[in-house]
Picture 1 (cartoon, rainbow, N blue to C red):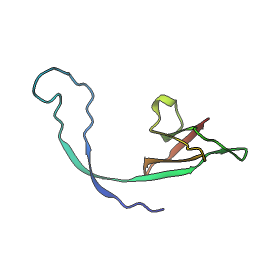
Picture 2 (cartoon, rainbow, N blue to C red; picture 1 turned 90 degrees about the horizontal axis):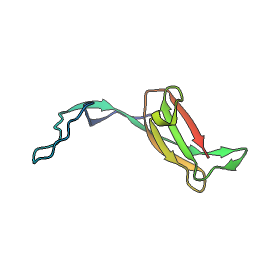
Picture 3 (cartoon, one colour; picture 1 turned 90 degrees about the vertical axis):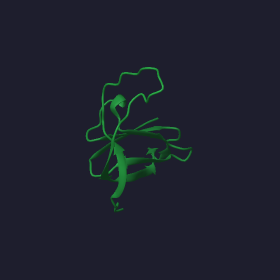
Picture 4 (cartoon, one colour; picture 1 turned 180 degrees about the vertical axis):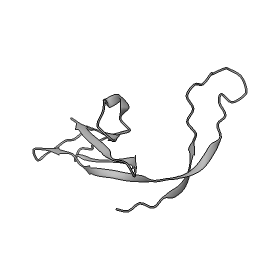
Length: 98
């Protein structure tokens, strides 16, 4: 399935934030328009022809790593189906935990 780039707005990344109480915004951030694409990764989770319901589906960009650094996470329904939005243009690593 081919994806078409869409014009969308993504916030710039910033790391440290000092949170102070007051009437002013906690942090103001400029946004920059950039082109990016998302795709829908979907499928059915099975093991030995058995459907994996209520299983966690984790996706990494690149190599599979620890659960804590997964790029996206979703769960399967009672029929083992799952769907999750992922950034296209990268190699994906997928694991399913039942």
